[in-house]
Length: 526
Image 1 (tube, rainbow, N blue to C red):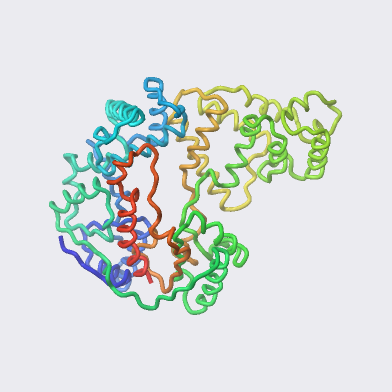
Image 2: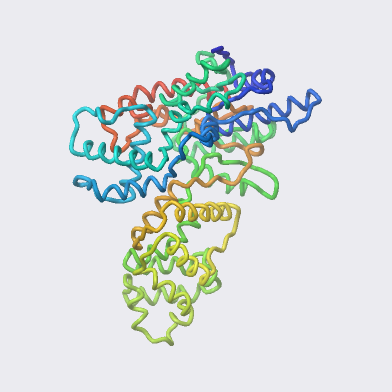
């Protein structure tokens, strides 16, 4: 393998695109970097007087594995919802030890633990200090893998192994392989790439880890709000000298910092995309469960689960996503005041059934069609398709959803895709209200919702992993504290302490090693 080192990302990508030839394959750690390499290559072709539509064969490592999974002799990857359901089915034969309870949450924890152990090639049957919990876990894992393998399916993390063992892999190998900034691979990924690099000429493209950074300024702030205000002020000043897309904010703790920066960006600039112009792009994905549209959609389910709570019912009436009650805020406010005055905070529907039909409740907020569908939820039991059919009837009767912006449209599209996945993977399994709500919210918490924005336009807000390989004129590293970089060791449920020693990110040593590798790559982006 030939290794090439560069001082910054721009030098690296320029040399990479110049050396690319037909038949080569470029692998990157992210789709974002793959897209950037394509743009650089197209610009290079135009400069040479060739067609700008010619593109190199470039993939993120995950996308390349996904494409190889379509080879004829590679088993089908079991979808995540199918895996959760299978774990739930196994609980009937292997009851969890106290204090664990069978639930979707437990199934997700088991799936995450199994993913970690497979990815790091750890034999869970050799766990030290074996307890009743780990003995039960190992039995469940063995039963789970036997079940999916018997159906000619595999776990997602087994894909590198089965791709490596495929008889048809050699037909998919390139003439020359370029590995770009791929130095933090899992053992299973390393094993696959080691096999490939023995077969074809390989070039590894890296950043000098010991290159002394220049032009770095360190500023301390009292809190995240003060930091965000100063950074955005400095960016507005820098925008007079540089195009917006060449300015980047690297958030060391995105989950905490995204809401802070979004708030100030909306106050100062407005929406990220205005018509066809991009002002800023938050690359860090949110999750469907966090969106206002999803939270509004499950309010009818929560109402019955939380003892017919008055505040939840009023939230449904006042929600902008339900068109039925728009323009009736005054009447609804009076009803809310009346319920408070009568000290009705729970079991609101029981109270409604006891009042006169002439009162304002029936007149303004309880049309028969909506009430009929709404009351059916309480004791309903059905499969996912039947549940969504019931929700559709309720939503149609109430004018849900009334979308107001691009974020709502994107959220609803992901919601529609999610429901199809659940119907397909959970089949005819019957669910009570509580079980369906748990499944729906769990699935939504795993469904990423991309923010509306352009990678090619506007200020780019990214996490520390997203910035690898990208090119900016200036970046701002925000939230750089002792707790954010390196991050504390991750705690993965149902992975034993003896196993965690061999898992990247689950011990201090691996977190320090990863931070040492990552920091030069962040600085090399500008």
